[in-house]
Image (cartoon, rainbow, N blue to C red; front, side, top):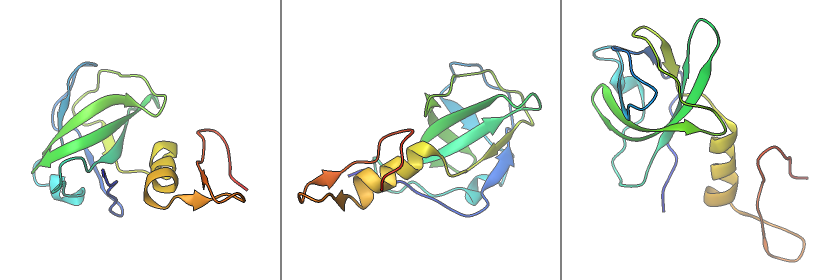
Length: 125
């Protein structure tokens, strides 16, 4: 089963610009170690890319080799943008990560004993 990875305060900037279709991003040299290691196939973490105009895109990181990361673009209802060298990237808590935790990692039981999934945009009581 895929497991989501987290680390505190992981942030950097893009080392080079990327198009809206690129699936590999590179952070500044030596800063990849700030982000989680992906040691098991299927594990992942989410990154948020942002620019000065406050455009944002969430990507799913499926592999990291030093400062280069393989990503799935436009996650959690965001759209894919082109990004410039120097644009910030950060591991932030987002709805997709919370949903994964509730629905995959720690499923909860409802009153009838079944699993109660947390849906995007809703809160569970």
